[in-house]
Image 1: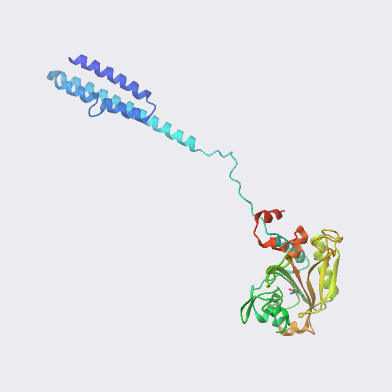
Image 2: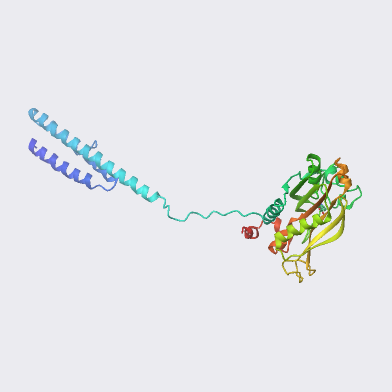
Amino acid sequence: MNPSQLISNLNDKLAQTLALVASAQELQALYDAKVAFAGKQGFLSDIMREMGKLPKEDKPGFGKEVNRAKVAFEEAYVAREEELKNAALMDKVKKDAVDVSLPGPAMAAGAKHPIYLVMDEVVGILSRLGYTVRTGPQIEKDWYNFEALNIPPDHPSRDMQDTFYIDDDHVLRTHTSPIQIHTLLTEKPPFRALAPGSVFRKDSDISHSPNFHQIEGLLVDKHVSMADLKGTIAFVLKELFGSAVKVRFRPSFFPFTEPSAEFDCSCPICSAKGCRLCKQTGWIEIGGSGLVNPRVFEAVKIDPKQWQGFAFGFGIERMAMIKYGIDDIRLFAENDLRFLGQFNL
Ligand code: PHE
């Protein structure tokens, strides 16, 4: 073959290859074109072998042509490779793109436990009367839970049947009243203290749970009467259940109060006509109360001639049952989200 034929072959092949490169839609097609044109056994290698057969004076000119073709191919190849890579990247970006207008996965909103909703509400009501919150340990020394509260050794609440004992001297507190003792020991009267908390007794049926909640109240001042106590409790219950509820006090006995009274509120569910929740009586028992027994003051070295007080304990489960019309106390501790999710009002 003479040089001009070879050059025209070269140009034809280059043109074809450039067309292939320009139209390549995938990187693989581009690599194939490269192998065919510039690979070890490709077109350029073949044509270089042909160059060996040319007369000496034609070689440099032809060599230049081959180089020019090689450079032209390289440039076109690199440019197209870049385009394809960019296009692939754009594709991937598009495919992976997040559509920020789509609704996100729903986040389950937590709800406050109904016991804590009622606790918070009662704390809110009593804080308007000047009460502030105190806390105490759930594992109590015998002295705080019983002894200082004038609960004698033979009192039934001290029985193994009724109380969870940790050891001879420690119990799971059976009521929030030991917080009265902690407060009386650490603070100077007058004060108004409020103590919500979890308490424990060996009790379990449709209206008793071994772990339940109380709110303790303790007011200590110079002149304190049963009338003050009744007014305070009536205020809380009317704020909580509506002004139509009636409050009733029944004489009772607690070793740490004297006189003592239990209090009931008229059933707001049936307007005191009688229903399952109030066991057809029209009344629901809410808690215990009374004037602080002087023997409690003596136990904490406060002079009972100088100071008087009243105390009360609300059962929170009871209040929540009334407020939300729940007739089985065990629901509060079952952790059934279908139940618990209903109170996020
Ligand atoms: N601690 C008593 C109980 O758990 C309730 C109570 C509290 C009574 C305060 C009087 C005064 O039954």
